[in-house]
Image 1 (cartoon, rainbow, N blue to C red):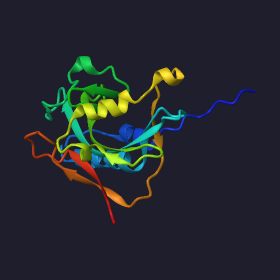
Image 2 (cartoon, helix red, strand yellow):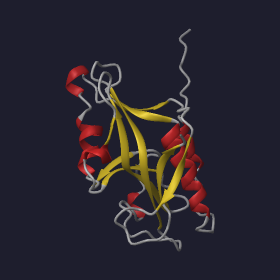
Image 3 (spheres, rainbow, N blue to C red):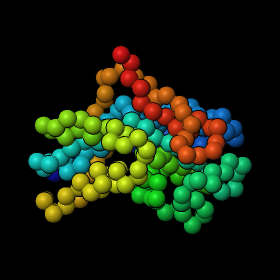
Image 4 (cartoon, rainbow, N blue to C red):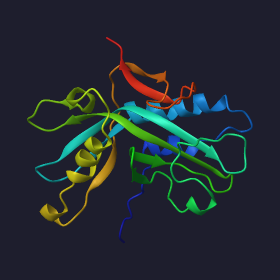
Length: 198
């Protein structure tokens, strides 16, 4: 009898799935976003080219949230992919856009669009010095992540385009520090950066 492997949801996917939206109060979003940020920073990493000699990891260090209700009171004009025609994406879909790469967690029943934009990350390549994208340049350039995320996935090497989220708890003590979103005139603390306690 053939055994079937049980799919284990990553901690990040579980955090996206548990997101409830505002539930009638915009203040609820902060705690909901913080849970996702902590999972993004401390529960794992993206693995590019897993199983190949040129495999490397991307660990998230800064993300910004975007949230827009089609029929509700909370609007976010900077949110890409909003409106009733934009509900076709799977939970956790990775979506490139002019600002970088979003991870989506919309809910068509509650009619909200939610995502986080990856602003900062650390690249970890075997045998090389780790580096953070914001060390390369002072200003954020979305194409940095496009190149490191999509450009490094070498499908010609093994016939597969291989990008996956790997659960690997980070034992480094730290927290998700709230901040304003970059280049947006908005006081909501919908951005978070990874801070390690020394």
